[in-house]
Image 1 (cartoon, rainbow, N blue to C red):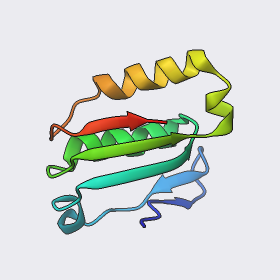
Image 2 (cartoon, rainbow, N blue to C red):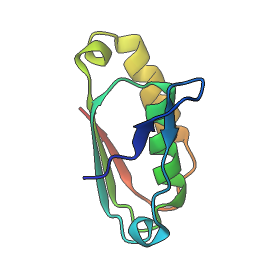
Image 3 (cartoon, one colour):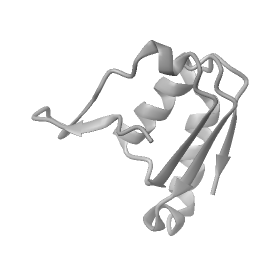
Image 4 (cartoon, rainbow, N blue to C red):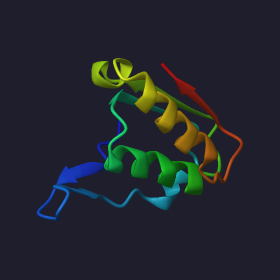
Length: 94
C-alpha cells in the first residue's frame, strides 16, 4: 500500500510525494479504490502509466458517486485509455 498523496497548502489541497524510482521500476499491479476521477486521481494514474515500465495491470474501483454518473465514467475511461504508457498494462474499471 502506498499513500502517494498528502495534504498540503497548495491550491488543490494535495501534493504528490515522490515515489522512489526503484519502486516504480518493479511495480506490476496497482489498485485505486474509491476513484471519482478528480484531477489528482487522474494525475496519479497518468504518472503511473507514463513511468512504471513493468506495470501489467491497473484496477480502478469507482466511488459510488462515479458509478451514479455514467457520462463521467465514459469521460474518465476515455481519458485514461488514451493516456501515454511506458508499458502495455491493462486498465480494469469496476
